[in-house]
Image (cartoon, rainbow, N blue to C red; front, side):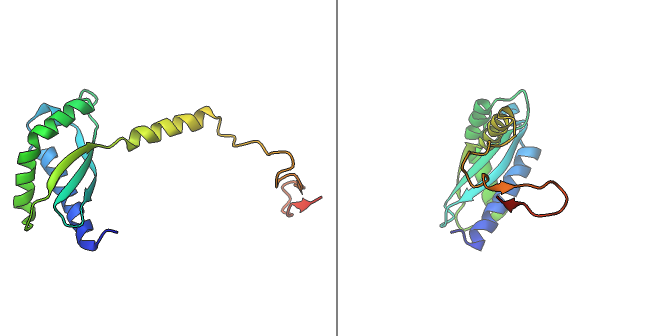
Length: 140
């Protein structure tokens, strides 16, 4: 269970790192990298930073290498900005949730979206719909 302090630190980390990547990143591998979420350990010593790559010409492996190179600088900058007793150790992780959502959407589109057909003898078998005249459906 997350405490309010943990949630506040996670939000500050996300905002600070996102701003840093947007304004101060000199590495072309960091172009188009956005921070999607931050998980902070309860003791505030470790933070997992989830990111996506929006730039079409930058692949996630290249962005991961660039983030790994810049982790020390980012961590030092975050430490100065947040002024916490301990600066969390940052770990950057690619966020695959958008890819999973697209695959799931494609699967649903491929299924036709009509929904499952009623099973004979199932709960809908005894229901008779009299049409759309406002009356309720009745059992036979």
